[in-house]
Image (tube, rainbow, N blue to C red; front, side, top):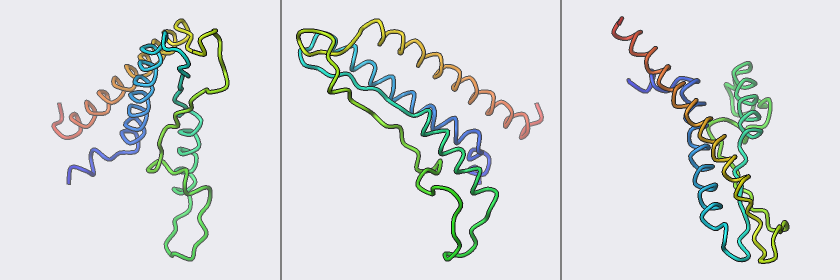
Length: 140
């Protein structure tokens, strides 16, 4: 019964973004931890474009209902929000230093700060959603 209240479209999107920013924070921390490791190649989490694609596909499905297995779906079904997973890309071809490492500590620290800002904004948005739900349920 509670799933009806906590499985809203907004909370689903916020949860996916929260998961992606958590993974991105772990990847950035790994890059920073290996800044002095010879031949280490940095990784990056890419999810913004893929999330937009999943959200667009979700909107397409809401416009047309598939009521039979023989119906042709609109859009790319694999890009739906439910199957959304961020991509982790490792940059093996780039090297900035003589030891083969390609981690730029300044870039990683800036990415960490941006990721934290996104994470904090998503957490605040989730708190606002729960506040609205509590208000709707209790009336105060």
